[in-house]
Length: 368
Picture 1 (tube, rainbow, N blue to C red):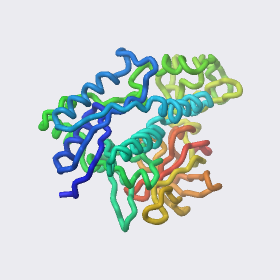
Picture 2 (cartoon, rainbow, N blue to C red):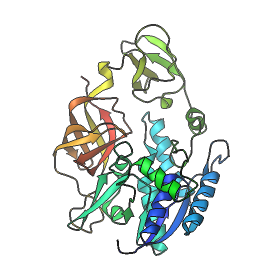
Picture 3 (tube, rainbow, N blue to C red):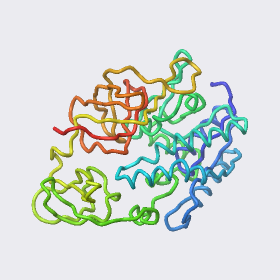
Picture 4 (cartoon, one colour):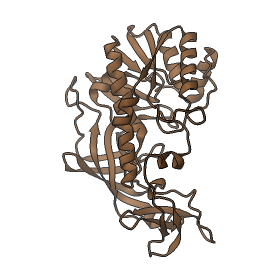
């Protein structure tokens, strides 16, 4: 049995965080919950589930027998996460708000709040693991390959990782739901959220139009032939197939690029078109999870060499070679070309099961 700790759990109103709190309480820890309210704009019942989620989190805390606080980080979210989100879309890239939300809100604002409240650690329902080896805290993949969320946690600094607990890392999702049902938790069968981090599952195009100006333009082939109209470059991502509205015979169409200067969306036919593949990428805004020495706050970069990489969530690990271009930029060269490598998304490096960190994709290299 682990030594009892004072732990604050981020209770989101979902099954994963509910079981996290339940397991820690069972293990004898002193547990409290925090429900984070991080979005207030157009917070209506149609799309935003904050009100229902908070009710579910409170109900779970009541059943488990722990106190829960509702804490508002909406100003920090808007400043640190949402402003970047809009800036990236305006620049024609496709950001991943979950990555930034974890680094800036869940493991910074929430962690700072928890420490102020006297907590020794925070816990979340992420499917990831942590190991301490010779005083160093290592971030590892979750054992459930279908749910592993280490990709979204790669920006955690050693000082954040030291105070983080991931009780679900060794479990598979069906087991988590079984535990919730046996404990009588009202979230046992609750559907997983798939919306934008903290904003909810609202129509994406309609949502973005409230914040960014849109400009229609042509969809063109790489040769320049106009085959359709786009409703605004920010609404499309590389590799996208749905919603293009291009008719005619032949193979389906995919987004292969964006010409921002000419406001044109470049589209190709066929999943295996060479323009959809990249043999390399460059990345910046590098962030590493491992300290040089135990107790260091900031991560140190791994040496150049061979690793595996994910350029999007749930893809298979891709063997690659890491080479640094500067202190804050690097190149990854893949053993085999990768499909739809997307600027704005994250490239995350692994050494076996250990998540080392990564960066934001600036540019994809040449194709097959």
